[in-house]
Length: 219
Image (tube, rainbow, N blue to C red; front, side, top):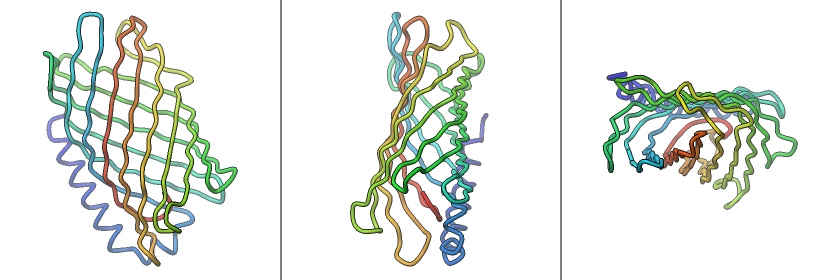
């Protein structure tokens, strides 16, 4: 995993440059495709019977969307590095990927279902989560078509963990603001997300993320 985060940041920078350089094309294709890249700060807090620990770090992510009408496929990938703030937790790499099938019954409401993989990679091994999720997202205009707010909630209908004691469940949510440039498909977004995963022994892992992204097309 060493060196992955710098490579992801380089990919994010390249995607950002492409989005800005091709904004006229993005405006033409905005009904079907979209994508973005950004930076994220993360904080992982683990609370167990034997004590608690907190790690934090930075990372980069890419996201994309391919759609037709009210149906679309959304993809996302994030990676970064987490270091201990408190406790004796070992440094680890964070890798997160998802694929969601999305349906919009109305323009302001998106219903999603799909898979979500998350791994915490350490020298001693990888803690790997596999989640099958249902999500609902609401988008609403704040300032005309220039500024929009988003609220998204999700819950895992199935959760598995490759390490004992196993997974008991997971849920989370996200809020954000999206800003669009006039007469182009380019957007910028500020977001805050929080996920809470539960193990069968009562341990909880709460992952918070504060992100800044730019992209083109729908969001």
